[in-house]
Image 1 (cartoon, rainbow, N blue to C red):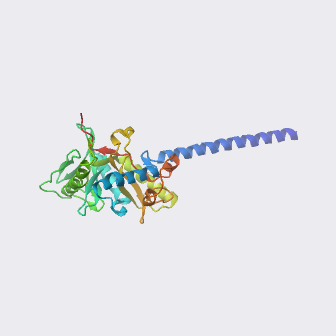
Image 2 (image 1 turned 60 degrees about the horizontal axis):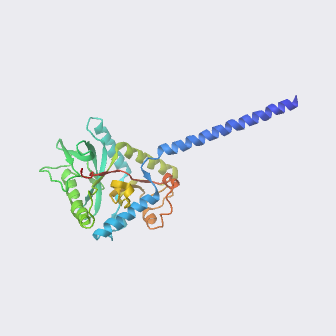
Length: 308
């Protein structure tokens, strides 16, 4: 009888161990799924962020005599709470049948000659098949055509809707036009004299859901790793000159990185972009790096290349 009881007890221990093992495996699988779901699709590795940053220095700034641009002048800083409020406002407008598909970082140059980018709501231009920026002023729907080499000022322009967000606050249509036109004359034209391309990027588009997903991702990582993320820094980057990238080959873009009060950080270890861009980053470009990365890229470039 004792032997039978011992056998049943042994069986119970085996079963308990089996079920605990199953439960542990399921929990591990669920945790992996949670990580996969909470990581935005467009998160890029630390190495990719550093490559984009360095490519911009080597293939753009150095080409047009601006190779001495300081690191702090390359960062376009946005407060995270301000960005969240802005995207929520666009979402509310979209719910009122205003055809907002997302927002674009439109390229510009400020009054001090610093290259920058400002945010504008976008709608799909069905004729040209691209995301076209717009704003609303004095009750008018004003398009901001990236396909044009320069834009015309309005006779009367005032910032009455707060739809164009720069790093220094909201802009009127005319203020945005001046900055956009300055980018054409100070950055595109000098580069075009050296490198002929079918088109030159003037804006990068993300959907509203992509913005919100990235904000949530940063807040979760900030809480988990005690990173004190307070903002997002936007940097100009350039894709590799690789034919497999097709239209993105050697194309200008922007990428986003987390920002604390002190510096731009690119991973959960708090490593700074400035330090990473100066190191030998090419050896590290694996999936693990993407999991811990805080950089965001792969937006839609605009304008589209001309149709044949």
